[in-house]
Length: 488
Image (tube, rainbow, N blue to C red):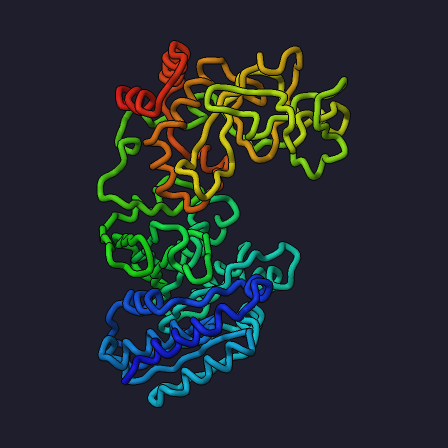
């Protein structure tokens, strides 16, 4: 007998290319390849329960449910019976879903037509709850004033994306000990927007297993999805123990590695932001272990902020070239590996911002600043890219504007001592910092919060690092990394 998953996967291959990009964007759904579906079904632990109640929210053509049911029929679970509840909002996909699930004669399947968020928030969680949930939820932002956001708030869920909403609702509707396996973007692991979701999950669940795809675009290669994804297994009301971390390059899982980590390396005990780290090696990093890298930004007397000038909101005050009554406006393209170039002729972005009552509050005194780009392109090797802002680059100008795509290190909204600024730039540009950052940051954005939570050398060590850097006309990556090794 051909596994039903293989039949469903053939339908996926046939149907997915015919769905327009606009429709995929509308529903935010990308169908699960059979290799990923099978891997997810196999992540569930053995169970002694007799009756399984399976939830598949956003079921598509049914690949995930089919993978789960195929495992059961092949002896992978010892359930006496399975009841399936599969939600799907897309009528065209529901027809395929119904066709695939009705072939399982031994299974009681309910296919629910409609929006999972609307339906699940409109009813009380079942008294018995789902024993298992397998999810590939939609990837789509939720507007703060939308019906979805209001519905989620009514049941105590605060989140900004469909995928995290689906997982949170699955948790609410699960039984104690219920097992949830979901493939979701890694972006929930850090950043301020997902903090309520992380707290929601960590208060209610134990994290048992996280799988990371090392290649950003391989989990949904057929749909050219560039989001970095993880597969996570949660146990509702479970006891938190060590966490299994597996990694593979792509959805073939042929080079998969497996490590066990104490939970304290996944969520640091004193981290108020509750970031979820995904370490890919057994040993702690040199930065974690070094007693020389234990200072917070508060310890060294430095703050970090996102550049306050949002250009599209202040468009009428921006100038392509500087003119009388304006201040320099610093974008990432004004920054090089060795310093600051301003103005840049031929730049498509403005070089300056007019000084007036509306803009003055967004400006900083001219001085030395360490700045870090908030975004890197997906092709770039580095996530953390730091540069020095030098006051001499701006001539007689006394204030500067920093555009919103930059994070800047400052002292109470003033510049830093020169060697402290240079030392911060050197430290942040080390390979060790970049590798450490990648462990907990799954997207190309570097938030001020991320930088605030990092550990740094002491202020004195950073100043000495800045003096060392100032003595060299050119610095290679090898020189910078070697100097950090001496500090460590």
